[in-house]
Image (cartoon, rainbow, N blue to C red):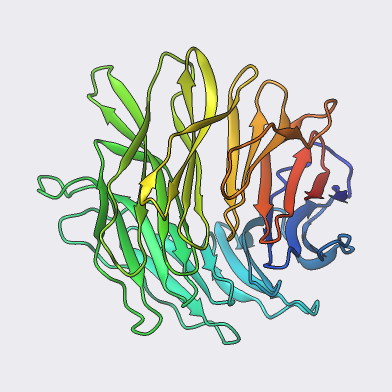
Length: 411
């Protein structure tokens, strides 16, 4: 289904950002930006299970500088989204958060600085974080409550430099898990590491840094996911660079049990091969029981392939990796989704054909053959979103060449 196209009909009318999420019952919610001749509108649509997408609702009319950020959908279908880049004066930009309730009403805007991270859970608790270095702040909203006043984010960590952009996850109780790559202060003795800090809604305090894994020189493409009870799965590329022409890129993953327990041993999956593309992490996700999955790309036997591996909670160990697809030809990109029951979906965009294919794996099985979900005659842009609901329904949002955004749902 076509959700929207630019009113001026110009395929080159600018970037069209969008975000999407699904509720526990399979309800899908989408938000996107649509550029017009003199401004930009932010629009929303909702699709109930076994139903059709609603007519677009204009949530905001904004300057063309505005852009859609993240979206979090609670279990009941209430959706909260972020907008950044709203120009209010020369060289001055702000953002805001807004909630679209299940009954179709829009809540009031919560103004924020431009460019925030948004995380939430199924109950409807939310946190938004912004800033950089040691100058970070957050606001928190419990389910059914109001946004708090801004509070300082995680403070300095002794012996460690402030990290870059963290990855966030929230458990069912509203605790927020912050995972980031840390480097030691110049001349310091602490190791480069993937570190975890946790915020408690009871104390409203952040813990110190708990080391998940050490890294060689740089951790890249960090991916993190959490489940309702607070388990985390982390995937990243570890770069060992001697600054003299030798650069080894390795894919690694780790599982962190809920409750502040010691992270399990790190698993190493792939090292750089003789290939145009270096290994890269596509995603990490896990189900309600803590069975974690990581997906990555690597060269294998002269081909560029996408692989996944699954960690079993029952066996307390990672299984053997599975090749899901090759690049046919050229490179590829992908997104990983795992629902609470353990059904897994890997959506792939092939650079050679610019088509999207979807591969599924049942909770106790292996990936089968993929199915194309975009036409052979149309090229997909570099942006798409994929989501897998608890009931197994998969929804994709994507843009083909031109200004149209499409949505497709299938079982």
